[in-house]
Image (cartoon, rainbow, N blue to C red; front, top):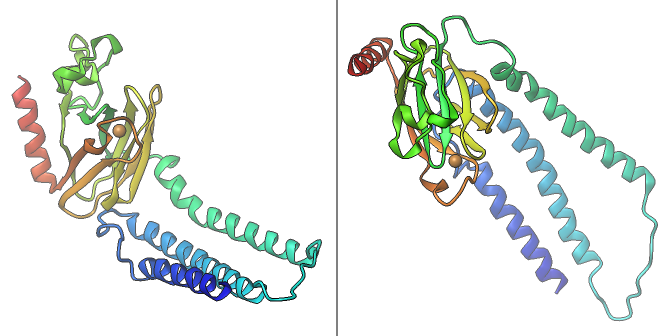
Length: 267
Ligand SMILES: [Cu+2]
């Protein structure tokens, strides 16, 4: 029985470690400026935690085998080993804080450091169960929105509750597909109308919750032209699974043409 348990523990350990080591299920290719650094942080974390995981499970299997039930065996009680406890608590703390400190700069960069002044402003609104993207238009200013004007079933401007009487909202563009020019930082404002959603763009290595009542500012820089998937990464209701969008990263010229066309359609 002890031997069978040892084998089961070791097989589960090595099979599950294999999928991480071989990166069988990994993120899609990186398409943002900070994505590479986030991947290497993942990489170091996985190696450190992988070593700890395998060592702990190998030890568990060995002890299950060593202390298996044998005829005539009696149990002995121990109060533990203080030195060992201090050592593993210290090592765990060092690992925990070390990984936190190593990733802190990267984490803060997208949140606390202001985006460059030429960043593209986009407001992202999550609601059950869609994403809407608002561009401020030529004036660079978002018009007012009012909760009483929100009509989610009408979609578009009405879905975000745009106050069309505000002069600043005249040139606001609200769309269901996100467009961004390549190699320009996007200055995001994240909002939610109902419950907590999470704006997740795996190719950009970008994920941030959208919380009702908060305007969350973050930024990232896409650096490859292409179509990328946007998902909601927070279970937000029955339609959570279909809360999906597309991010189209295009050249600056294509972006300008797209935006002027949207503005022309508004006239
Ligand atoms: Cu959602």
